[in-house]
Length: 235
Image (tube, rainbow, N blue to C red; front, side, top):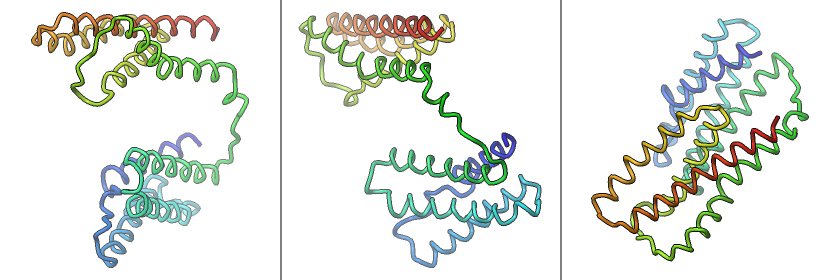
């Protein structure tokens, strides 16, 4: 089962991101051109599927159905969804639908059962709580704590860029703590210092430098604390 899933995943990656990406289906293209690209995409994916399944007879028709569905999904996401919702949601939905189709394909040959006791286990709930604390909760907490400094940070750079940087750095620090890879935290802090504080030094704004440094230390400290708490309660 795992080997088949790995083969299908390889075909998906090659087909959707290398050989026949969904972006080839353009809304402004003529009907004949779209039909031609749809057929060629189906044939290419079918050929790849036949190749990885070694042209076994029992895979021929299911391979064709999966290739046909892949082409339909490409048309659906590009011609129907794109422009109506944000591209990131188009991408997420496309990947989710492809994964669902691949799971159904594997299930047809190797019926499997999902162990929901693992999905709804205490450790999963603990991890979800930790992730929410690291991202949304810490964003609000750090923002409220920084208000005590009574400093109006300049509105430059990407909108909410600092918020997303903080979320990502806390997630990385949390991961490094869980992996007991403390050297990674030092590397992350050094890398941020080079990029962030190099620009601050050129601006010669001491207050802004101190503000960013305090926020960074708070962010790292909370991430380390949550990482240690997660390890303590997950035992």
